[in-house]
Image (cartoon, rainbow, N blue to C red):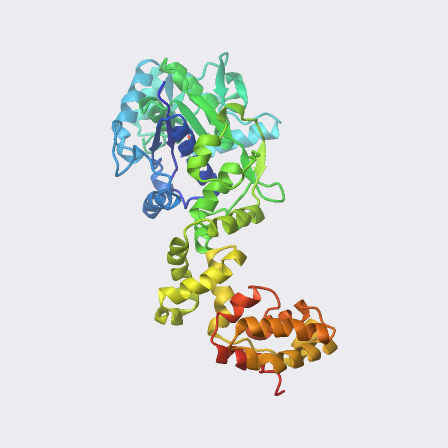
Length: 476
Ligand code: GLU
């Protein structure tokens, strides 16, 4: 069997982590099994689709470096890959269900359905369509159609049926149809619903494994009934656990980093995002891995079912830190430039070489591309330091001693090694630890006591500028 999997986003908003995860796992699975990764855009719900979102999906997949073999723009044997262009196909299959009496017209209005639902809830019953329209006589149906009463097509479930699906993490999952409603296959405007078109396309596009979020598990039950109605075999499923925030709630728009756009704007790298996403919910001996390595190493045979997994921004940030130091320096420089330019427009006059040297010095401290601007801010603007703050930061007595040690040594700044050596020696003579002098030096130059190593720091600005900053408090 040749593996065929698909990523099937609905362009109702922008890519979020749940989408990214589905894309990553489908991609990894296809590559490991030497199969085909397909992109299908599920844009049948015209009221909820944003044109911009479709373009964005294509761009985001490219940005994430998850190339598909079949899909919009690329084409393939099962074109078109936009559901909005496949309506004829859906109508044709709907007609088959109509002919075989597997569906019926439902004329209930949204208000009637809602009232029915409320009543069932009030009676402590699970809300389910009560089949009012399942038994209308032909004459009654004719009259309603003649009167122009809007209707939808509902699937006529056999409540006695039990379906079994195979889920890669859960194993065998059984669904008893008595727990489900006759579901809608069309909307009042005649277009087909997600439930139906998603099934039709998985079938016609010969999808072998449906890898998607656990929120679709109950849809799978109803779709199993559709596979049965057309007498086609079910694919294998893998329902990915729900992603939760630190409070254990389903990740939502309110959580930073839920939207891929947030992460892009904050300067996270696609390599880090994909790597992190691929590792949530499983333990890998080697955490930082390229997609190629994950393709080799990911064990799809030993998946365990987890109800939910936790999204940990701190862990993602850790992955990003690792990746910023892993990618080629020149590539990092190119990625960093737009961020730097936005934060410090004056950088446009700087040579790449100069930025590159600075970047190399702070690289080990960076978590995101956005951090670069903040960490280099002192190169553009000297910190404003009040003596009282300086004294509070290091203690009045030690601060005064450090200042005098520093002042005594600024003459040696032309030779950085000598300056550092001399600072260390004099610190010791004056009863200070090395860091009790280095901290103040850093603070005077950057406004922060922690940061880049002393040697690198002193190489980041010209000697005169450093001298000026180191002696700025001396004249107070
Ligand atoms: N369009 C669905 C979604 O975005 C896809 C579900 C599926 O993968 O089957 O949730």
